[in-house]
Image (cartoon, rainbow, N blue to C red):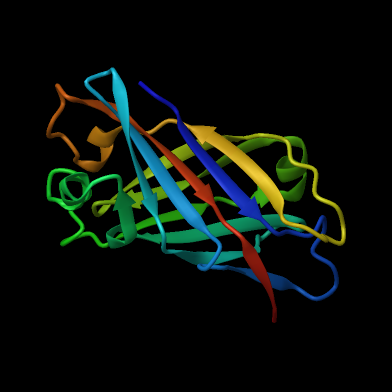
Amino acid sequence: MRRIALSLLLLLPAYAGAIETDYRIDPATSQATFQVRVLWLESVDGHFTQVIGDVVPGPRPDSWVVDATIAVNSVTMSSTHLREWVLARSFFDAGHHPVIHFVSDPIAQAQLDQGGTLTGYLTLRGVTAPIQFTVQPSHCESPVAAPCQILLTGRVHRSTFGMNSDRLALSDSVDLNLSITLQPESR
């Protein structure tokens, strides 16, 4: 089984401040990639060009909740044949399930800065399953003058989301990477 790497490029302040701020994911500069091992020898890579969503203050002080949506049909691949294959019913089933959705549980600002665990729920092909990621330490300055990169790693199985075809040719685990740039929105 392989690990999922989820990398979020987040523009977050080190503290919420007096005015609560939401952060909108900038679709022009955000992206998601995935990688699945084929025949346990090589990998197939894909790139999603439409990632949208928000990061909002969580229920506890200095905590955040990530809510990201990826348009499945925005995937680009190295060939038209591979793109058609991953959009088909046996893989993403884009005709019936056009988005991938991730909502995190609240994560403390300290866990983003120092590293920790991010838990949440991933919805893919109409199936929602819990997911856990390890957050790599990230040092964001306050006020943030430049984007802050947050790296997360975890593990998911295709079979959890009903992707049971091609089990002899494809690994059950898929790597997923997100780079998300946020723009502040004051409430």
